[in-house]
Image (tube, rainbow, N blue to C red):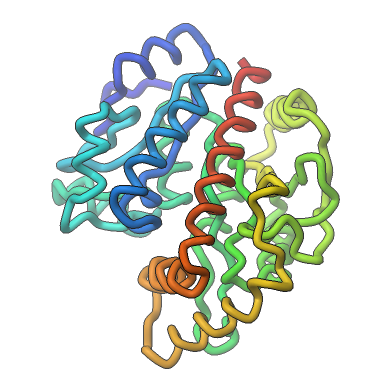
Length: 304
């Protein structure tokens, strides 16, 4: 892809890897600015990048800085982003605005997919994807992540959708959009902090090579859109659904009572879950992101 006319700045390591058709894994920046408290956010970002490199791929954390899409951040920029103020949480709807207005922005799953595709990166690791929110019949709150999967050909490795969501409706929405959801070594759809949501995953693959082969076949068939790769959190790090569901219900109820809506919902709920679990949710979050980064790097290597 010709990127010379785009507001796109690739780090030297990312540009070199892409030129040589080597494995590159995109990473989002919302987890740094809105997903975790400081300094856990910056420390986790570094650990995730290290996990990608340990599997033989190049890490490409993506963020909007002064109206430019930066693909691959140096350590100084990561540190700054961890405490930066007035950073937009950017999705498809406001990506162009953030760029044209010269703003700083962290990229959600949807925006990271768009930016990764513009840069020529086809594999992306995150924590959990967005989805259909609980109470959607009242709020109509559905994450732009779901429609992005149907549009943008990037494979996203995640620990399922965030357990704060309506997971059954999220899976139904993805099916309607024609988005393949593949469980990695599992037949159960994972629920972020928990290994199983109690819902079956539509497809299953037991190796990174099998997932890469499916992605390659989609390219051959010229099928639009991406792939959701659902990778359960490691067993020793999970919080079972039976244990955490009551806390999720409480946090969601508190958000509704407080009138919190839109992009503010997920950061609020993640922060509240951190309090309700005495920090355990954060430890599980870090473990699942690292696991996803390793698998994404393995898939990227198989594709390369």
